[in-house]
Length: 262
Ligand SMILES: Nc1ncnc2c1ncn2[C@@H]1O[C@H](COP(=O)(O)OP(=O)(O)OP(=O)(O)O)[C@@H](O)[C@H]1O
Image 1 (tube, rainbow, N blue to C red):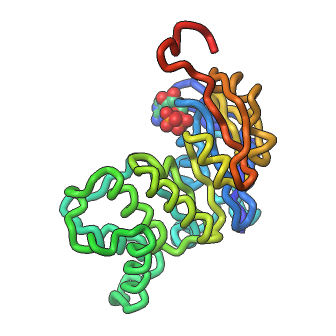
Image 2 (image 1 turned 180 degrees about the vertical axis):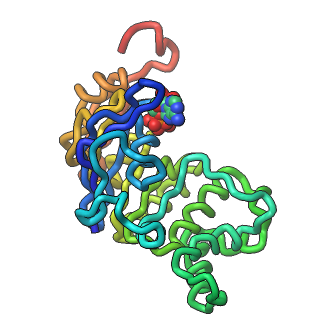
């Protein structure tokens, strides 16, 4: 089960936003997408799940052009959690998560015990079971984020695309959501801003800069002091966590940050 982009480009109003990106999510692994604001991460994710059509190049699912995959199969296979997902305001939490079951049900099928089980399990996995009947619009930002992730889980996808899933989440929930994603064992492409979370949870990392892929590989090869300084304009020191993962220390004096170039 793989999702890949081959020389994919997309632009609008004469501006190139994603330029010639080639990457592949290894089956069952987490591919992190990092890059500064506006580097094209969300645009690329939208191309990868066919919410946008590529201007050139091809996105492939198991080696097939994603443009040729039926809408239903795509909906069954691939779940996408957008950065600022909005949902009908009058829905309860459980209704939002139930939407994740839609691709698995035929038009005339009644709601089954298996569907309900998938919804309950998804809510439990993001720690939101007790909010089953709460109105979605009354949730906090972090709670909404977790419910949207539960909707994606209820879809039981084989490919999961997450755009900044840790947005709005407190540190404990950031860690628990990413741990959960790791344990799911599905092929996952996740845009992350936090480089330390990317180093901790991703098997591979792709680094975008101004729409182009400037580095890709293991966190050890991509997250170097030189690359972070060049792409993000921030001085860092690379160390190691207790588990041997990369740890990035930002070399910042908060009292005079911005007064001199890093
Ligand atoms: N539909 C569009 N029309 C015009 N410009 C767009 C459109 N979609 C994206 N862009 C521009 O493309 C660039 C990349 O946007 P994108 O949202 O993909 O970046 P990003 O890396 O996800 O950014 P962030 O980290 O801030 O979320 C931005 O400059 C954005 O303004």
